[in-house]
Length: 189
Picture 1 (cartoon, rainbow, N blue to C red):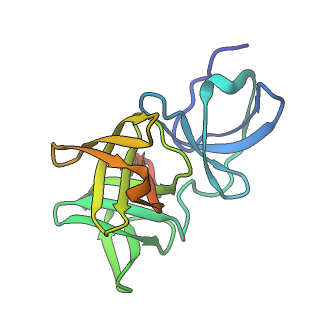
Picture 2: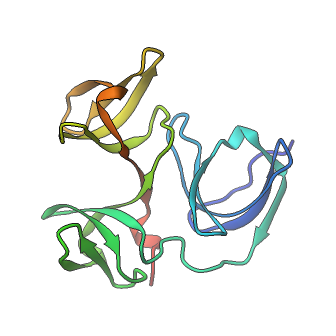
């Protein structure tokens, strides 16, 4: 099987899995450690693919098909005034327009944004994933997955510098969002 081609954010291509499934997708990011590739499939869904399970010799470049980041996507914006989480209202151009969870809209000039993440509602987690999740009691945890233990515990290096050892049974599994880092300078026009 051939080596992975030189691909980056926004590249659209097709590739086959080792089992023969064909994927038509747009690259969002390379995940750290064992996280894999974060992609947007042509049907609009966000997915994670294991690069070791792809036949890179089947790679074929495809023409772009819309922006990788789309209205309706859940995003997290880090800027000087803090973190804002909401739904993208329109394609990113000079501003990022969000509808916040409290129902208000905000517009941020792109040059004021330090970091931008697409939030991916994950059904599985991998070491290296940056996550936001809630316990069933309502506590929010933000950090990087360090390990998943066989006794259903999750070890996280918290963003604030601490560590968390969380039992999966105590988490609201519907709240687990993986943060996919996006290159602010390459998004929109």
